[in-house]
Image 1 (cartoon, protein in one colour):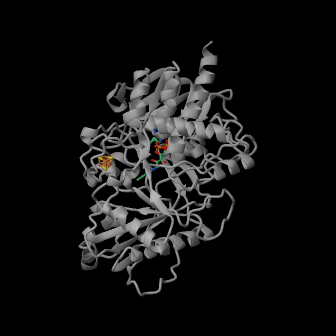
Image 2 (tube, protein in one colour):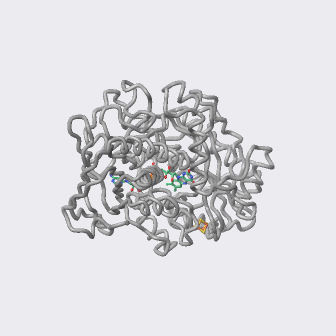
Amino acid sequence: MIYDAAALPHPLVLEADVCVVGSGAGGGTAAMVAAEAGLRVVVLEAGAFVPPEAMTQREEQMIPALLWDHGGRTTADRAVAIHQGRAVGGSTVHNLNLIKRVPDAILEAWRRERGLSHLSLARWHALYDEAEALLGVTDVPEALVSRHNRVLRDGAEALGWRGGRLRHNRAGCQTSGFCLLGCAYDAKNNVPRVVLPRAVRAGATVLSNAQAVRVEQDDGRARAVVARAIDPVTRVTRGRVEIRARHVCLSASATGTAALLARSEVPDPSGTTGRGLRVHPALVVAGEMRDEVRAWQGVPQSYECTEHLTLTGTARPPLGTRTWIVPAFAHPIGTATMLPGLGAEHRRLMRLYPRLAVLTAMIHDETAGRVRPSGELGVELDYWPDAADRAELLFGLEACARLLFAAGARRVFVPTHPVTELSPSDPFPRFALERGSMPVTAVHPMASVPMGDDPRASAVGSDGAHHHVDGLWVADGSLFPTSIGVPPQLSIYAMGLHVGRAIAGRGARGRA
Ligand SMILES: Cc1cc2nc3c(=O)[nH]c(=O)nc-3n(C[C@H](O)[C@H](O)[C@H](O)COP(=O)(O)OP(=O)(O)OC[C@H]3O[C@@H](n4cnc5c(N)ncnc54)[C@H](O)[C@@H]3O)c2cc1C
Ligand code: SF4
């Protein structure tokens, strides 16, 4: 069952075999596997349960309801916006349903550098097969490629650049275009639709509006999770929740998990907890097309340009090999916040909205950022791309502009202050990327608790078990040793299956 922790009597104390913190791609899947193995599972989720009938398709309502910090989460210096889901189902509720596997070259580099004895290449492939079957992954059909995505395809074909249609986890899509605000048609094969129902059928209990603040330990063993029941509207604490469990699985995302480990003073002689954060930072460029694009209509992302993405797993590859380009649609409020200028100048740009095509260049980043807890309930994030990553981002910016012009854009807008307007014959300016000079956004935090076999160099092993606290596990994007260069959800679902199974193995032995 799914209960609202804020509406239950407090203090609330429950006993379980496994307490999973976070109900996103990693936590939901780990909970499903553990529950189906017969373990008593309680999932704590800081966000609310928002069913499809409550998805109103309105930005001002859904973004605060589904994202951390009302959609306004940023790094401490406010230079990078980091969007993350906070709801039953985590970021899978509002994400864009793209499915990619991490290339073998990266998986092999991880094994060479960090051992990862539980994650052979064959094991990864089996996990991917299983996760794709779970999520009903298919190619996006040609009929679902929107006008906006065809702009990118036209540009790539005109330049002779590599690209292609994407794969996704949707079924029964009505092409409404509201994926980022949650799907009112329940057409996403995500955690709430395909994973948690199985967990709940197997007996798992999900507590929404329950934010974990600390993992309690005794003699080097996890013993319980202490949480706060949070009012879903005011976000005021309503009471204390404690889940006593032999196994605690942290799946609170790459920001939440690292913050919880640090706040709980979990030992880590390697000093790596919270220090390897990657985010796949991205820049956007808009083009004014001759005809209406109506970018808000249809499946938001169905075509990718991979001309400048060659993932080899080696450090510091040449400039122009770490950039992934896709359309980046935003609803009106999101677009208004990204477009520079004020008053009449801003209105002039917004009037172009129906004819705007927007591309984003997201990079496979090498900069390591930092996650720290902030008070009892918050996280503090430090991340600013280093010189090589900034150069790659600016390379991507220019590549997006070239694609838009090749697709027939009359003008291209780079969101500097004031806006930089370019016509097809203009040389592309040399920009410097400085804090605040352009909006830098990220939606893929990962690698904040990088796994490895050596307890002196990592906090968590490649089965998700913590090296220094028995019964403590991690199952989310924190585990990746580096950036992965592609959208991460499939790999995080795979980690949920993998770690859930390891917990089930230990849990079963613990009971015998
Ligand atoms: C706008 C957007 C679009 C995206 N599109 C795609 C895409 O198309 N394809 C793709 O592969 N990836 C996409 N992603 C990324 C993908 O959704 C995430 O990488 C993935 O869901 C992360 O899984 P996770 O389990 O690590 O964390 P999440 O799915 O974010 O789940 C973590 C959960 O833990 C909860 N939590 C955090 N702290 C606590 C706490 N202390 N106590 C209790 N609960 C807590 C959070 O509220 C959240 O619900 C997108 C992300 C965003 C933001
Ligand atoms: S485009 Fe499809 S998956 Fe996205 S919100 Fe609309 S119906 Fe749902």
